Length: 498
Image (cartoon, rainbow, N blue to C red):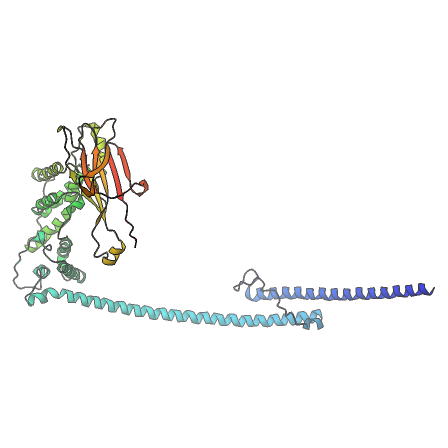
């Protein structure tokens, strides 16, 4: 019985303990729930206040803060435990309001700072602009002073008895210069005998007169003097595809023509080129020389004291036309390897010829190559094929050359490759061949022999004996198309090693 009572008492105590635990858990969960509600209320209030006063949200604020409206609570601050929900909320609201006021002050201060900063920048820009304008004005005055110093040279040197060519050319037309002056100039070769330094100084003086507009009524005269000054002392006619002899003949013809005649020739030559004239290199060279000789005639007219005579020359003037036609035909005969008569009478040749003409243009760093080697032939009736060959020359910027030369003083040009275009319009069902062979006892050169077969004789050219680059992606070509055999190759570059 006693044992039963003891068990009942123990069970009663366990029940009381369990009940106390449940009551404690209920109280803690209630406090936790109240705390969460306080936190939510604080969050809502904070969100409303921040949005009301600043228009900021967690997603849209200048601070990039995605938790801007989340209340900040110290982890060790237990002051909320002793306060009821209402007091805690009121306290939090007061704190939020205080922080809102603080943010307002910061925002106002930042606004004032930005205004002050913009005023400072604006003031600095105005100061810099004023300084730049002052500098530009000073620079313009300095430039004007220097130009006036340059313009004063011709008269000063004349008074000292040491006038240069450009001084005479300027003073001759200067209305302020009244002293007698002998005019005796070779206009066609006005600046060519001068050194490069004298030509450079002459251009500087002429440009100074143009910039200061010292001789406004002679602006065209000064501009034409510049054209003459820019003419090189020695023309490289081969760059235009004609020989030096032909180039000199072109200059000889033009030097005897008047300004009006040159203008007519210019129109005629342009018409010829547009009409598909055969001898393109000749006519293009002639056209490129006209501006120089027009400048010569203009300067000559001014120096002689006469106006440019406006002579109407007929476009169909037979004498002038014949002179140019004869020279063009003569050029074609003397340079058959490069400029071939238009074979319009032979329909089989026409397409091949037109294709061949496409390859007669010189590119940069290319020169006409005509090192033809005579070969014995048993049949003298065979025809020598026409050809247009080019040699490519350039600079090899090795370590040695880079150490001893520069772009202003480059090393000697070396042969870097060749381009062969051989004209075989009469071949039917056959493909011309080529082969390399020794050049006698020479080791530094070799011969390339082109074999077309009847009705063409073999021809050979002497080339530098170096290893070829045979990669088509690097410029190598070897094909026969439309009556023209093409062989293009470059040499392998030597890699220098220590």
